[in-house]
Image 1 (cartoon, rainbow, N blue to C red):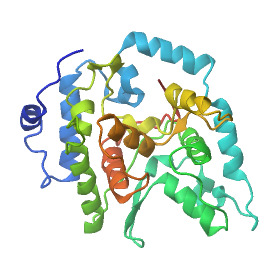
Image 2 (cartoon, one colour):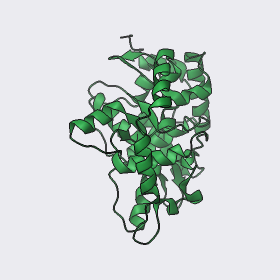
Image 3 (spheres, rainbow, N blue to C red):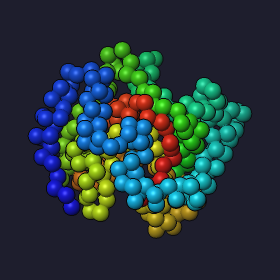
Image 4 (cartoon, rainbow, N blue to C red):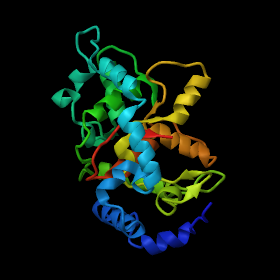
Length: 291
């Protein structure tokens, strides 16, 4: 295992101007600048592929898996059926979104001025269901994740375009997410940045740490770990193995031995808002395949 960089020192050196007083635009500039310097041979557009942008051998194995036997295919079909399934009033999830919900995932999450809050794709799907007399689906995985995955699949190739609104409420949520990203937590005293900025590309317990840049582009993802966990519990069906970005946040909190928050909580939603903005300009390629 490679030695971890002293994060406090790295933060002051690499992100001297990266403070809560900085604008989102300057944050984005510094974020990209850091990764360009850390991985000079990696092209910006390749960051949508996560760890597979950093490791040629892993990339080759992943590409074979993706090209010949993607395990998420049945899940996409299940998500598509739920997306178009009629509610009792004759409408569907598709009816709630502009363009029928096709090729729009790249603009989520976004700040809703009327509601005064950030809307994630998953929260919009469940809001749609409730509005049309159906029950909310379980957050983070299962059927909800398959619907979100299908919507991501229809958006493949579109560049992520998350906006930080001029409304001060939008900026407040963005800064809350930024604070969460850099704040240390848990018994291991790690932050999101410790693993996915300052130690991106390093090995931890046999796993390669992915760069924060581009992480959100391939969510929801299908993970072997999640599929095996579902199967161990006797669960079957096309939805097993899928998870949203906030499910991953919850898992990361557990891994650093911190108390996880509720999925779609204000804190995780703020984190997703900041995290997504940092990957603006990269192409959506969800659902992704991961270990």
